[in-house]
Length: 371
Ligand SMILES: C[S@@+](CC[C@H](N)C(=O)[O-])C[C@H]1O[C@@H](n2cnc3c(N)ncnc32)[C@H](O)[C@@H]1O
Image 1 (cartoon, protein in one colour):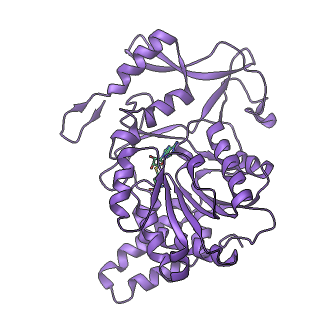
Image 2: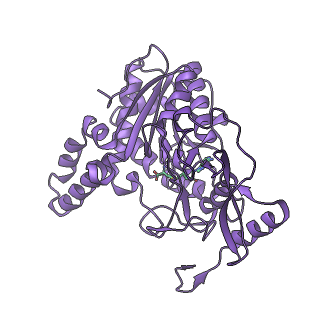
Image 3: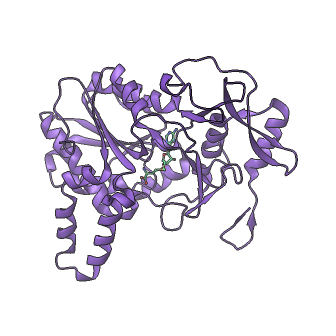
């Protein structure tokens, strides 16, 4: 149980709903569990909780410093120029949280008035609650909202940004059993505690694309993750870029190629928690497999840049110069800016675990930051 802001103990209403569903239908996949925890219409985490920021469960790069969103805005402005400065384009953000990144990116975009005049901000957000926060942050900016990538307008190039969006998409988990076969990992009822527990689907999993061949001989007990929704985003965005032109930038924590191991994790109030303990009250994420994401996008016909570490990427975009500028004549803020710079770029902070990958149509200019 987790202490609520009021000091009492907060019950997870979704736990009761899941218990009833599992009692009626049998165990559900980890994917179905994660999808309900995050986006259940009433009790999903992003629909009901104060997730991001100082008063939420976790802090993301745009909430650490304005430098992050500003540099991404300048990255987009630079690519717009490399594309030949089209008269119209969409600056799209997937999963914009509190709207901070887009707000900072648009402020930086004003440095190039022709770019600001050409772009329409588009936010793709599933949570009505967060759409409200974003609207407040972006008042007067002429932004439009959609709930799905499929609804993004199709009549102009896209400059698409996605920070910590892919890690919020559900994963499937497979475990090798003592019988040598692979089984899907599911969530069932724990009669002893009246809570939830992991168990394996007794049916053996047929080998297919979901299980990379190099991992199939892993020892019994090994867990492998795979995210069909993450690969679907790669394919959908790649198709749009080929059709409309533009560039897409994905930033997230993850690994460069598929490996063995479980990365599903829950965070409540900046602390790691049991993923099965507080469904709908804790954030649930999984590390992004950038290798599979890149392969899916490449097969869909786009060019891949990266992944590179977030630190290397932000340094290449000039974050140190931006930090120095913010510190000029503002001695009181200098320490905060230094600290933010370190958190965003140092290898022991977000500089290496967080990775940046860009997609561009074939035979188009290379985006900045990947030299
Ligand atoms: C971890 S937060 C990241 C927020 C923001 N990008 C930041 O860096 O602060 C994930 C965001 O993606 C949104 N999201 C999660 N799943 C989504 C989906 N399937 N479609 C659209 N938005 C989704 C969440 O509501 C939230 O805004």
